[in-house]
View 1 (tube, rainbow, N blue to C red):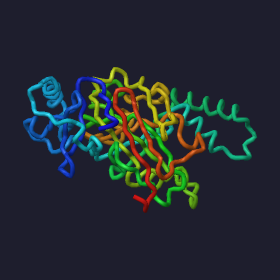
View 2: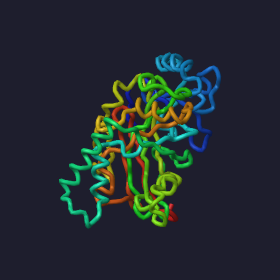
View 3: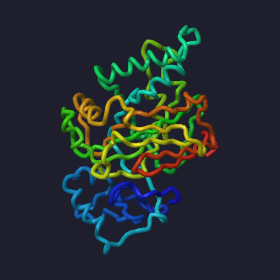
View 4: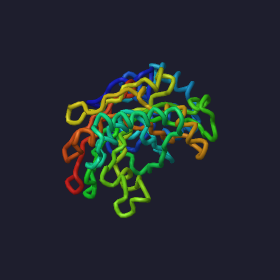
Length: 327
C-alpha cells in the first residue's frame, strides 16, 4: 500500500480483502495484518462484530498484537476497505470556528455593507457565544455514502459545487443512551478519518428556502464519505482534541488545522447525540470540518482531482475524483 503510514499505538484495526476475495476484519501491526476471523474465538465476520464485544475484545487484541508467532499477511498484498460499516452516522455541522467564519463570509450577500473584517469579527463573536452557551448542531448521514480510503470518488453529474470536508470521526464501542459528558468518552472505541463531501449548490433548497438545509441531497451520494484507512483504538490517541487535520488537493495543502478549533469536543457531541438517539456499536460521530474548504479557496472538485487526507496518528487516505459517466 503506497500510502501506508504506521498509525499511532501498537496496533490498529481495519477491513481488508485479498484480490477479489471476501472482506475480513484485521489487526494491523508493523505493516502486517492478522485475520481476526481465525484469531478471535467467536470468528467475527466484520469489524462491527468485534465492536459489539469491545470490552471483551480489547485485551485480547492487545495480546494478539504482541504475539509474533501468529500467521500474518503483508499489507502490501491486500485491498483496504472502509474500516467499519455503521448502522448510523451522526454528523456535526458548523463545529470549527474558523471554518464557519470562512463559509459565512464566502456566502454573504453582495449587498452586505460590512467589510470582510467586520463580517469576520461579527461571526467570530457568534461562534464564541455558541461554544459557551449553545448546543451542538448534528444531522444524520447515510451509511450508503461510505466508500474506501483509496477508492475513486464519483462526482455526480448533478453536483455543481462538490467540495471536500476532512473530519475526525469517533467510532462507538457500546450502546450509549443519555450518557453524561463526563462518561461519554468511555463509549468511544477509537477514531478514524472521514471526508464528508458536500455539494455546496444543494445545501439550501432553492424551491423552498424557508425549509432550510437539504442534507440528503448535498451529502449522501454514493462515495461521498471516504472512510479510513484505520480504526485506531482510543487508548492510542492521547488527546483527540489536539490532532492535526490536513487535506491536500493534487499535492497542495488546502486544510491544515488542529481539532483544538472545534467548538464542541467529542465528549460533548457524544453526550448530546445520546440525549435523543441510542448510539450503537460501530456508529460514527463525525466532528465537523476545519477551515480550508473549496468554497473558501474558490476551487471546487473536478474530474481527476486527487485528495489526500491525514489526521495525526490515524494514517492517510487518498482518493481520486472521477466525473460520473467517465469511470
